[in-house]
Image (cartoon, rainbow, N blue to C red):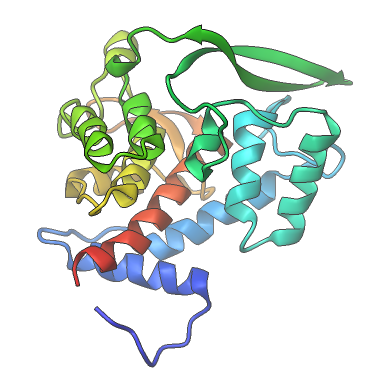
Length: 270
């Protein structure tokens, strides 16, 4: 598919393509406009910005501010639509002297040692009154059994530079898809599905060469998990009942997944 006459800015073009792809998919049902969903998601993120902290809290009303992954991801997501705000967030992160986590940066090719996955630590950076700045940081200990987690398999597929190996990770993750969500070790233990893994699946599918086509049910479920605030709810059960609140990390990963899928899909159908 070629678009030669329409003159959209890059982000708007991505959202238009996303709507066309999802509405034309075989068996597609009436769903919220995915382009509008991304815009509403970005509006949710900007509404959480705390000017005093220069950061976003974990969710609306939270007193915890995560440098990695939340605010790092928010700065990346908002860089195109709200560059000034993204710059403020990045500056606030740098002010805390924290420059990396060692894991989530692999999405953008910024992780020094993305593989193998290592165990992580959750650290308090400092307190500001009744607010706490925290961050995640990987240790030197290799994480045994990471192949039992769909999100890590999907991240491995993104980080892997060898195309056949990347696709193997994708296929291993998709074997955990049960038609409702990713039934991996975490889901079996907690008896609920994680929404952010749906966003990671779209992101990983677009990074494969050639891109993969996720199940339509996965896209349906992902769009259904956006609430009225514009953010994405963290978890859901087997009936589709929402569990938890809309938070920054989940919303960012879903937005990144939707945009990556939109950019990759037209090229795969030429």
